[in-house]
Image (cartoon, rainbow over all chains, first blue to last red; front, side, top):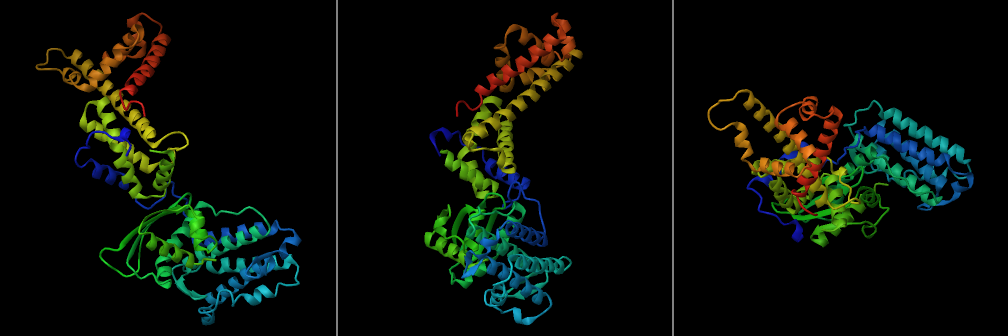
Length: 286
Length: 187
């Protein structure tokens, strides 16, 4: 507080009354403005559309540029086709894709693109992605599905797929020196919700067992605020507050940024905060 | 408090961070409250202004632009507008009560108008009105305190209706400026 901020003591009860009235007008956690709510299917559709636009803009010579994990742009698009094919198998009840490796299982689809015209690769991916949208358009989004080591509701899987499409869209854009893209606020909101919701699982996977209460504030369009409990259940978990930009946090969760690349505002135990951020990185939603 | 802190606080408010709201309240509510109290002279009304201001900030955090000024200034302006609105409605209430009292003279006891005029709100308003130029003050008194329409006030003052209207507009603008100065002072 600066000297200019000082004033008389406030009447008793005013603080509680004002805070209650405010939270009655807008619930805690909700961003303002709230982006238009869209379904996970729509988020996927938008993700497909964004990648499609990027690919349409690519000159032939750019398809051979190195993009990710030893794949060129064309191979990475093949990987996306492979993921869609595995999702089709998952939706058809094929148990083998439940434990399949996300990268290993899609490697054949990536490899078979070599020597083919880029238009064929793009058309094959577009057909596979279109088939996914077709299959999920009328599916029960709450039904649990299992693919690539994930067991989760179908709706959440589609958001994870939208996340992956955005990440690979940017891998391609980076490879061909196009400016990065940012999802629209509605899609981003689904992505930040998914990342915040999955954080406790990632924490458990990375060995964060100490009881920790995280107040996660993601700023900017598509952001929001979440109180996430991690580690063992305890009456007084260590409290950590992390404030950062929603897009930056999604890049972290996609393993495309490290904590030192983000503009972070952390309060609470720094060591515990670092463990939480490491867990976010481990989400690897790419 | 620096602008960068205000920017972060604004971003947190927009993200729905209720702790940011509590921080903003703890830092700035005393100034908002004291400013409102100075103008309104009424504790309950000043508390209402504080509530209105913070509910507005929480509902529409995007209306605050850190590039334009500090959060303190923004809240002061919000409070000023709200307090002036209250004063205006109080003016109208006074005018209505005074008018009805004149229509029904002889009622026992102090009139509602006399009670209200004893309040600090009325004192502040009266003081502000006294600072108006004669022509404007006359129209304000006729419209707000006698309850005349602009046309009736123009006739009573012996001036064209258009002149009465423009004097009233100028008077209200001046009143707001004078009352503003009494609100939160320089930020």
